[in-house]
Image (cartoon, rainbow, N blue to C red):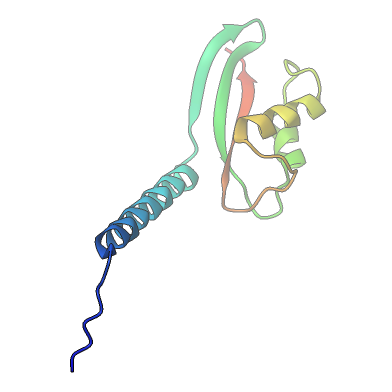
Length: 112
């Protein structure tokens, strides 16, 4: 005798597996583009202190959020602590930990 077991609703599970796979691949590509892009700078409005820019900075081994902030800080920001808070807000991070090889956005003012 043959085992004639019915297979119910198999097509939706196969479809969900393919959709999930495609979504995972799309997210992986997005993250690769986000963290592998070379350093870029975007400019905004001019102020008395210079032009407000946003720079993408690659985190190197031994870097900390504090060391990166000290390197890019200018007097237009009220304090180094507020500047670090702004960097964290821009990058959507809550801790002070940064990882070598990744990129973060850093605001700064550049003299004209």
